[in-house]
Structures are given as C-alpha cells and as structure tokens.
Amino acid sequence: MPTYSCPAKINVALSVGRPRPGDGYHPLCSWMARVSLGDDLLLERAAGGASSFTIEWAADAPSPSAIDWPLDKDLMVRAHRLLEGECKRELPVRALLRKRTPVGAGMGGGSSDAATMFLALDALFGLDVGTATLVRLASTLGSDIPFFFGAPSALVSGVGEWIEDLPDAGTIDLALILPPLQCNTRAVYKTYDAVCPDAAVDEAGVRGLTRRRPLPPDGPFNDLAQAAFVVEPRLRQLRDSCVTTLGRPVHVTGSGAAMFVVARDAADAQAVAGRVRSLGTTAIAVATL
Image (cartoon, rainbow, N blue to C red; front, side):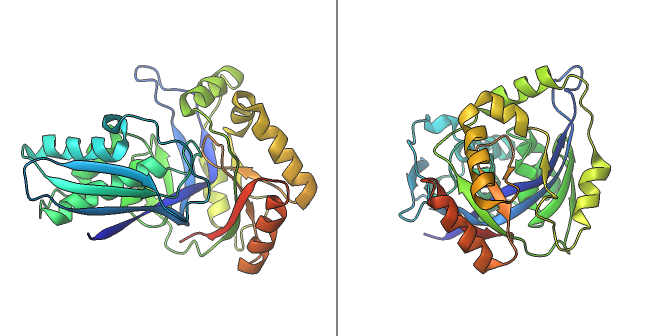
C-alpha cells in the first residue's frame, strides 16, 4: 500500500484572542512548524464498494496510549466522508493509520492525518478538487488542518484559515517532552476565556519571533500554557521539574500536554532528551522540517 507521511507540528508561538461574538471561534496568530515525528497513512483504492479503516500504534511510537475513540469520530475518517459528500461519489479505500504522534498532546496529530487523507484522496482518485475547496472543507473539521496543506513552517492567523508560508524559517532542533498526560482542548480554551477575558491577539509578537535567527531558547511563547496548567496541574509540576533539572526554558505546544526545549543542535537535543528521560518522562530529539 502506498504510504503517506502525516507529520506532527509544534506551536513555536501562539497568541489567542477572546472568542468572536456569534460563532465563538477564537482568533489567533501562531507560528506553526512541522516536526520529524508523525503518523503514516497507508492508503489504496478498495476493490469493492466499501471503505475500511484501521488505526494502530506504530512499533516505534514513543508514547502510545489507548485507541478508544469511535472510528466515525476520527478526523481521518471524517475527512474521507466529507470529501465523498463534496464530490457526490463514493471513494472506496483501504486505510491503515500507524500512529506515532501522542493523543491529546497539542501536536495536531489528528489534524495532520485528516489533511493527508484529503490530499491523498485527491491524488488517488484524480479529483482535482483544488486547495481552496480543501481548505474550506478542512476548516469545518478543525482550525489546525489547513496548515498541513502548505509549507512546513507558516504564520497562521484568523481562526486558522489565513496561512503565510515561512520558507526561510530554517531548521530548529528540539527536545520534545511527551508526558503520560492529555489536555482536553475544549477545557483549556474554556479556562483561558475565564482567566483572560480581555485577551487580544499579539500578531506583532508572533511575527517578530519568526525573524529571529537563531531562535532563542526563551523566545517561544504560548498564551494557552497557563490554562493548560490549570486543567492539568501535573503538567505544571513536570514543567517545573524539567526547568529545574535542565536550567532551560520549557515550552508547551498548542493546548498541551507535549512540551519542548529549544536546543543548540541535534546532539544537544539528544542530550536534553536524555536528561528528561532520567526524570521518568518520555522525551525524544526532533527537528522542524
């Protein structure tokens, strides 16, 4: 079966405003970057008329957990059905998703899977849907999904629909910390609204960080981090332990629970990840793509 890569992402910077009146969506501005960790989607056309979907952990997944959600709730499956509805035809496939991106980590695993399904189906069936249509469809499933249609590094704004590629962002080496915790995105945003009722998007701050070379270890920021710590106090405790052990800033990505440390180079990322593992927490060295 042909294999398609579904890379995870980190939010190098994330600024979030208060929800919009009417639809309740949060305006944001974020520097998103794909990383060298992700899922694999194995996909081929099915001989019969029915599609089949299987989800399992890859043998080298760094932090597997229970796959306990209904298939019809999975973003990959929903993307397939949404594109069938748009095209008004069946798109029968056999799909096997081998996961590596942790669940509930704020790394866009499900969003990347969905984006890859959209793109793979478009190519596999020669649909020629067009990027604008894919973005429109994807936006109904999740605000992170359109990012995965473009460049590996981008400035994302609006409610995820405005994407400005950053082709000169360069590679950033990271130690990625993967605690055995999950942060419910909806709960994190609800908490954020309660503690930051007058929040405003700092686009200038995010955009300014994209120009800094090299990225300073204390440069990344995330408006949702404190809310994630309220929702999952153990995440704050782990962050503090890592900061004490490493003597370096530790940053939350997305709504948590994954965290990262900006490293000097690949060897430094490996060393930092090793020191985090000495605390009994999974950590790996990755790089932005």
